[in-house]
Image (cartoon, rainbow, N blue to C red; front, top):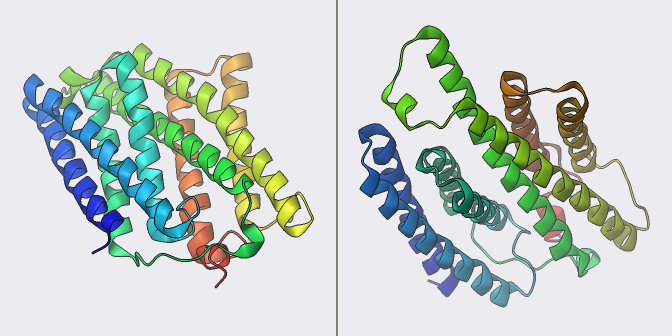
Length: 278
């Protein structure tokens, strides 16, 4: 077993334990388990960082060329962004929604081929790490917005029906959730925009054109317009609350299709086989 696969399995275990502790915190309202979960999640992030660094040392490029690497990098980005938000909000209930998402990505990464592949020489550029880092960080921020949107709709439904599940007593106010949604939009949208711009510059150096209407590029543009509409609505029309939460959820589903559906179903120059030159 290579070093990066060993650390990958350790990370997966730590994320699993952290997820269980966060869920117990929400269901049983045990504050201690949430605190333990936070420290274990931090430990998992550190081992995850070691995993990615060791993978980089083995391959010589930012490890996102295969499905295994991309799922792992996506999960690490989500945990990193959540930990930054956690410094501000200290919401263990948010972790109970975010950690399972990172865990599912890690499980998916563990279920596919973990073989190290060589990057397609055509794509070997210093723009590669810039583009993918910006893109995945933007994805991760919108994952937080997705979780906040789900929490918003759940709490609103319980308030309207007056049927309060144990989860209700752990949820922050609707205003706080809406604030998280807006902050995610203000951070995630510029990251996504810079990711698309850097990708266009990279495409020009690799293929001689800034935009080729590749399926991934087309769906990335659709997703960008969706989030642009949400930002415009919030700044000019005053979209808040339920509508903003629904947009955040729909935007993330569109983003997931851009990431998974396009790469796995539609192919093109952004498919994993194209990145590895196969």
